[in-house]
Length: 448
Ligand code: PHE
Image: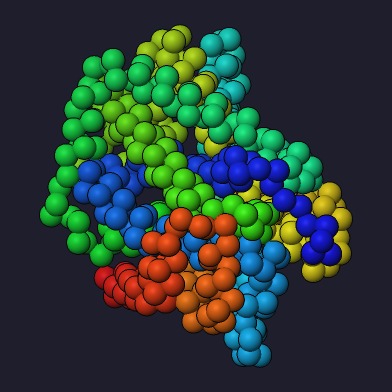
């Protein structure tokens, strides 16, 4: 089975797919709102530090384990564990990752469905179909189900097509479009009244909040979510890459692009919020707190787009299309986790596996939609804030302690001539520093 495994066709294919996975709702929806409600630039600084010092090394652990094992996450952990206990633990971690990844896709496809609904709403509004526009914009169980279903369908269709013609082709097409649309939107928003005030909030740090344990764990969870860590996505993408490629550099590029898109998305969203404020849209609650995340993008931005008239609506349409695109290149990477497992461990064909896993995850979404208030926020917190750092911790421990040292050293040197700095520092770093820091932050957040 190993010999027939797919691979990305090129370095660029990998970069597109991995950045496609990393860049998503987390960058454009999660990061700016977290930054805005957590002390602006202070959060950005903490985030940058955590992304480079913890998320990047954890990403490398995942990519190396994947490339070495050339397998899905369950088999990969099994392969690097020598003893029977560590093997069992590895299998459990692999499954935990598949479950967390599927739960993430469960809520992610709901949010991405809203994006589809809002992009259509701008069209309905312009063509004066008021009833349809209202239905599309109003929160309802039926609307949520319809658009979540639609989004899941797109995801399944791409994954059913496989690695090169599915994941790689679509990521390469969609990613550059995404960045171009964001840049056009920034240029537009910055010419509007109120934008500069938003820029100040985003760029001038409030250091009094930097050591707040909630801020730290939020930033850590956000960094792990944004780089798609812990659940096995990057492990699988690592397994599709050739041994000749310089992984530390490629991983570095993915990290930089991911952080870069988050930062520029902040340049769009935060000024846009203050432009909305100028236009009479409420963005703070009566206690001066920023409105919660989903309210922000889904109430404030459409209101802003409408206040700006027809050009605003066109931008609104572009913006929500952009969100759908970003979400799609991420959702395919989440579905791939369960699909590869089904293909490799149960001999199911790719197409069937995509429909089966997609169907099960859609049922998860349905359960969340039908129990929205108790489940939605809860699933997000459990998966992204706690499970992803925990799984990232497990990856570092496996790479640093369980993986046989010589095999590990040999793997990380493959294709990495000229990156001596990396293989001298990283093994020690991933063995001691990463686990200790992640652990401290997790404990800290539980006791906060
Ligand atoms: N990184 C994606 C985002 O920022 C989310 C994601 C999480 C994708 C886990 C894959 C796995 O939107």
